[in-house]
Image 1 (cartoon, one colour):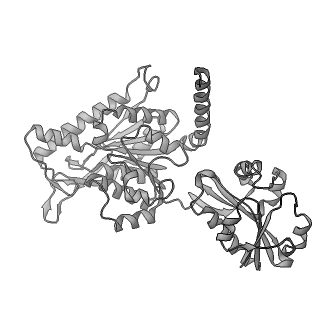
Image 2 (cartoon, rainbow, N blue to C red):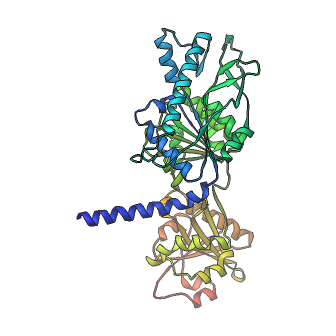
Image 3 (cartoon, rainbow, N blue to C red):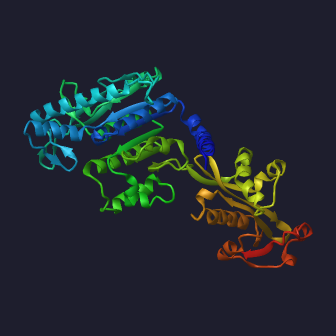
Length: 450
């Protein structure tokens, strides 16, 4: 491959990726995302990559609230002063000397984050970004008090978030930055868990997404392995798996962040994303590709759903079946024909994209129906989706009094046989179908009794 060919190939790949991301650019524009990252992510030598991606999100019209943690920075301050940390699970017991270290660590880290968000060098992705970052006394806290006989002193929990002030800030095009500190009406300052702050803000704002950037890569969790082909889990399944799994390789802090993610889902946040800090571009890949690269917990029942097709699905179905028509697997259909038949189609939609379809054409006088146009997007095959469509078709057929399904296929007879179909003859088809049978295609006739 010469240089010009390589350049053309790279350019084509870039254009294809940009076009594939376009639907997500439109969908996320004007939406509110809360992004929480621990002090571990801030301490990474490549932390600026996350900042670059955050700046790009803002440029693409996303309203951003950032919440940072500071655990390793606090540990370092304690060590410098010769103080031993006192932890109960993931909770720090914060006495006054420890609180001095918390304030110093959080304050210094916050200034560093603000400085990085202010970068404007033309030689970096921040060139021309001109981000405006603001903070405030938005978090009202209360003491955690005595738990299991231990007084946590100046460790607190979120009491209230000034959602109105944050909303006004976002409406003005600024980024809100929150630290893991809260203040009480009596003037005390409390050390808070960053995950709890992020959860409370996301629920209060009714954020479209809550994103946790974790020290551990969630792709390595057994929880993620249970999430199937692309790392998406419904909330109920995530809670069930977490409660049944004690061997997740999680730090106490990451386990607390996962608990906050589940609580946010119960609080009404429809999409919660968990990403590893080490993966370059994880934030962008998770948000601007169909399958992402992390673990997503969702409460939106329609994230992936099977439903009756509508006229709005015609374009998606055509895009899905066109490659199969060109390969001779399916009989070509015009847009006009599909529009007339759309009421006979079912579709499986994932995040707004048609990823599978099937059609049921009934011959009620024969108590038979044809299962036709079964297609699944190449990225989602071998995951049981065609079988799910078949089960829906069989239910619909029984409701219509159909006693037998038949299918005509040239490429996949074994799939039908595996799902209960048996070989049949042309003479067993309804007369209307026999008249239009294409003898040149020599399709195999398969029949299933319901």
